[in-house]
Length: 331
Image 1 (cartoon, rainbow, N blue to C red):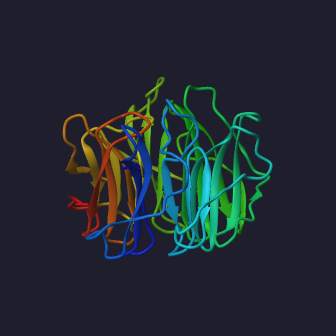
Image 2: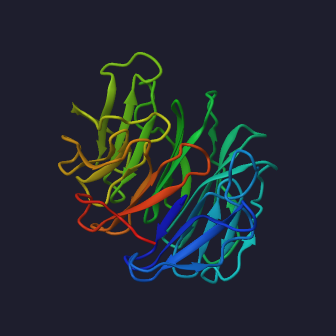
Image 3: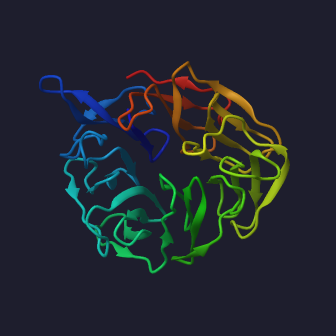
């Protein structure tokens, strides 16, 4: 399993691979209509699960509703009939070889963050969810000089935030009144990456891996909070979640004051606005947490992977109590 997306407590999809002819693996998409109790195969895009040994393909899936969805990274495919058929999308004004790294949908729009190697910029493309009429934003973010650009795209209704980390924070953009504008993410000078989540259009929480690639005071993971939509952030005096990996943390926040982060222990959560963090799921040995997200204030999903490669074999976890207890899902 590589990716999971839910559009309601009941309706969701997972993307991964399955054995097909010979010893090869084929792209697979499964759907649930009862909150993960029963999963059934559905039509996957006619491409492959992306892997280092085979260029192209997709590794992620997102749906906005029952009909409109996208498979991406590095290619981009869309469906507008619930996955019955898929179409390959070529985004405008983006050079050949671009990587569609992040796609999220909210408020009737789908946003794509694209790594464009020709211009060495992160481009932002937007479309109505029910169409493939994409247009490019005049706002872009430079790609950092480090070894691996890492994008985070966070949407909350009509508001949105985009961060480009490349070991440290490179830059960001903020969605305001339907337009993407340049924005300064938290922790621009702490020699480490910043990881962001939003529970409302105003309430944001960030974890910064301070001092990972140079001096910082204080050093180590730190929690920052914003109550004005990211205009300003306040660093909390207590330490952030332990085991945050500079290139692998994912942060999710279902309601103000609550957040779950991936890290070396597994899943760590705060229920007091970031003052304290506790381990809520201890990952088995040789397993890392690949993803965490919430579809409601109480129901969330996470992917635990047993392979750090580009084509991970993962298992799905779910919580029904706001992140306190996480249980494996059986397929």
